Image 1 (spheres, helix red, strand yellow):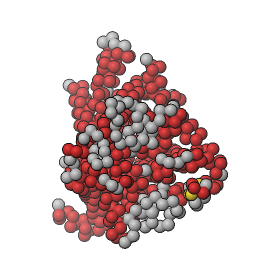
Image 2 (tube, rainbow over the protein chains, first blue to last red; image 1 turned 90 degrees about the vertical axis):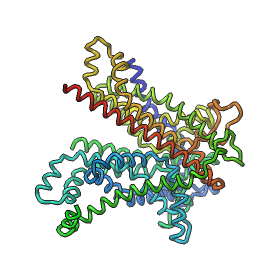
Image 3 (cartoon, each protein chain N blue to C red; image 1 turned 90 degrees about the horizontal axis):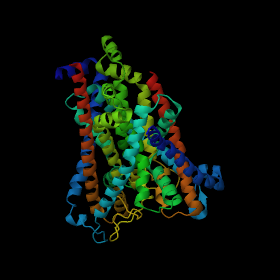
Image 4 (cartoon, each protein chain N blue to C red; image 1 turned 120 degrees about the horizontal axis):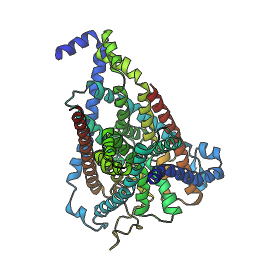
Length: 276
Length: 295
């Protein structure tokens, strides 16, 4: 039986190995055929003319993710502080359940919400197309909020209460103690939460595809449409063939490398938190 | 209370401002969620009609019933595979493994990696491996097995936590009565951990129900179920979430998309509530067991 349990535990090892092998084996030949610099730094994606440059999508992913961090993280941090230090005991279970629900809402539903509400709103406000980088950033900011809050709140709680009490005893107010003593002490957890949020944001597909416009040109500004790596795969995988199809898989490989780097950061930060 | 606030404002304006920000953020988040759910519910409920639950999908009647049935089939298959696998893996990690051994570290690293992989990459992998390499084509089976890999880390982690939460006294008592390791695990430890495991499984179900990107390619987007083919696992079929994505991007059936959103939201709400309920029962029981140890 022990062997059976071990075998079951090893499925995740097998799964990661298979994912790596199949993504890389299908993606790397295309990268080499297109030429790595042309693929990664090419500014034009025109499959009909055999131009496969994914720089617009890499930048699109980076910009949209950065936007979501700017919008979502401050809100998430404040919410985590509220849950840990401000929330009346009676309110806590309800609020916690709410954050969990927010994490559980499917991304298509978020996307739909963006499509029927935020996009028309942006159209009203700017007088132009509503499917923009800003729209996607706002929506993703909302979506990563529960992720970030979920990591930061326990990190805040794990700071020894002496820090807070010591600060109070020195005459600092409640707010000053929380923000200048406890929050800095929990910084590894805070950063881990933010990095995790970045991972969520860069990998999100369905919500982005519904609100971002998906134009293949280089990102041209906050109020212009944008296409990310994830949405590039979904948009064209349905009809792509040959090199075009492989180029899409190669886009997935680039995304995978981004995710692996982010994962590494998260686990390194977690280990540091554990040591502290 | 208001006096305290006034004093705070006078003596420590910065603190008062920060305090305001924190309360404001909490209010804003609450308002956002209530608005999101409320908006979709209010606009969607009136588009719910009996015809939407007709067995057949036609261009006149964009029924969501086939998609709902597909979702059910995909969920059942994925759970049938992922739950035993996840529980066994967690049993190994919690009950057998030596802490810090090489293989355990490897398992942990890979499980964490799986957890961070976005669903579109699972979809891509499912397409390349299950649909293409194993020649399953666009099929419910390929979609389900793709989701197995996706939810496996969640099941492993929650089960492991539940197992670790079972007090050692249970194990010792079982050993003391002469039970072997295997009997102890299956008859004592696992039953005690059931609420925790269940809460994880239900959370996983929620992820399956809401998943789109990982299903879009391995499972395809065929809207109708052919006659007598309901349980044919090698047919392509869209789940409810995929159905909703297709409807809202086509833009022809927005009313039905609203209604589908409501159905999806209700499903997720129910699953979430049940999961929370299970987790709370687990905590309560553990609290009780600690108390009984005191007496």
